[in-house]
Image (cartoon, one colour):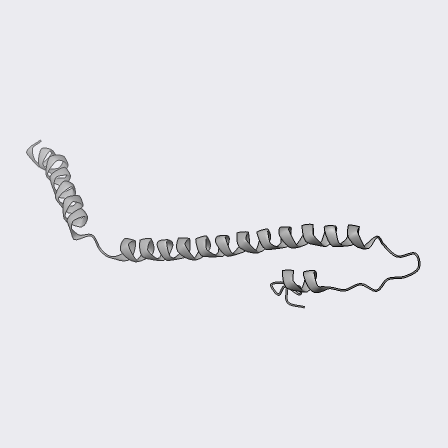
Length: 98
C-alpha cells in the first residue's frame, strides 16, 4: 500500500452501512461517532492542502533565491577588488618605502 494514498474519503465514511446484529452497537452512537470522524477527516485534508500549498510556495521562493544568488553581482565584485587593491597598496607600499 502506498503511504501517501488515502483509502477512505469523508463521503465513504458517511455512506458506510453496518449490519445490525442481535447484540449490536447503538446505531445513534455509531452515527454520531462517524460524524465526528468525518469532521476531523475534512479538517485534516484541508490542513494537508494548505501545507502542500505553503510547501510549494516556499520551494519556489527557495529556487528564486538560489537563482539570484548564483548570478554574479559585478558591483560587489568590483567593490571587493577595489578594497583589496587599496589594502595591497597600504601593506606593500609601506614595506617598499621602509
